[in-house]
Length: 120
Image (cartoon, rainbow, N blue to C red; front, side, top):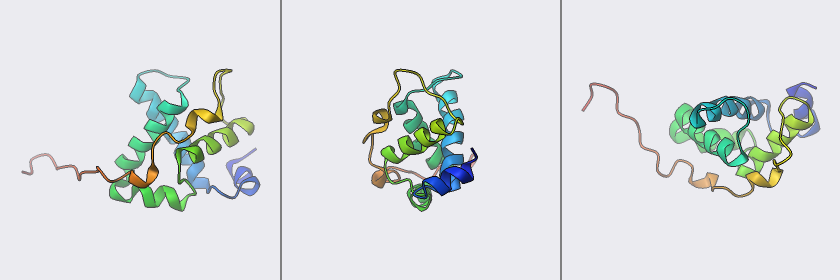
C-alpha cells in the first residue's frame, strides 16, 4: 500500500504528514542515539524538534495544514503506516503512547530565532 492509498483511506492527513512522520522517525533515532525502535514519546519529541528546526515559527501552521493538530494525530499517522506495513511496532507499543503528550498549539511559543555564526 502506498502513502497515497493511506490518504485515500484516511483523508484527515495529507501525504506530507506521512513523509514528515517518517522523517521524524529517523530524526528521533538520532536524538536518542540508537537505530531501530523508538517509543511514542520519543517519536513525538522528535516530531516537535524536527518541525521547529525545519519550519521555525511556522511549524504549527505547517503541521496543521497537513492535518496534524495533536500528538494523537502523530499516533494516528504512525498506526496508519503500521497497518500499511510501512512502519513496525513492538508488542509493548500502543496508539495510547501518543495521547496528549504536549500541546501543539504552544509548539512555537518558546521558539527563538537562532543567531547566525559571527553575528552579535
